[in-house]
Length: 228
Picture 1 (cartoon, rainbow, N blue to C red):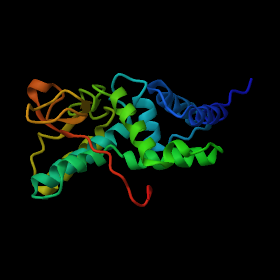
Picture 2 (picture 1 turned 90 degrees about the horizontal axis):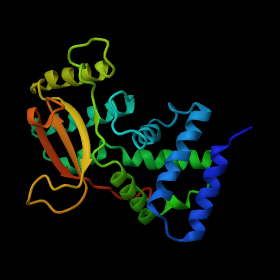
Picture 3 (picture 1 turned 30 degrees about the vertical axis):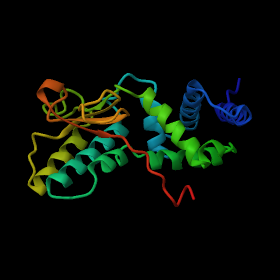
Picture 4 (picture 1 turned 180 degrees about the vertical axis):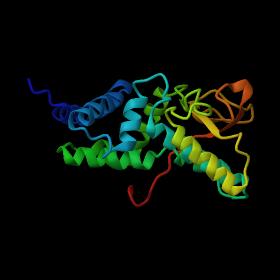
């Protein structure tokens, strides 16, 4: 038997167009089928951000995922930049570390490569709703380094962790406060913050009580070059 996940995804997208409204589970089904396409075609390296989200959506947390380590590196680079005096928006910059733009581009690329209609992703309102459902589904599922990354030279993520330490040392920033974990929540981290979805960083340790905890509102930017 020749199972064809691309054909199934194409039919699924067509059914979404006809329905006019999309349920939570139907959005998640897009990523489930995309994951099968990546597996069948051995396409993980071609679509690294899509692979990250396809993995993330089916696990309670990620501590052995190269795409996840890249997110932690990007988030730590933002923290270091702000500790060194950068005056941009940390809220927006950590949100960008989640590579939502790259996820969109790779979903479009995968769809076009397999003859799948891209209408679900071509309109910003549709894309925003897709992301909102996705991030609700990912609440409290942490991306993190393995517990032994600091002590075990052969630990998964060790190379990325060492690069973060080196970057901090080069910039003259403390190396004992590296971003060890990122997760999403919609519990207000501060009573003065509005309800919504928040990114949360744990610096220096995976355990909340032993870490420096930083949080900010997750933003989904509208790229005018993609969505006119």
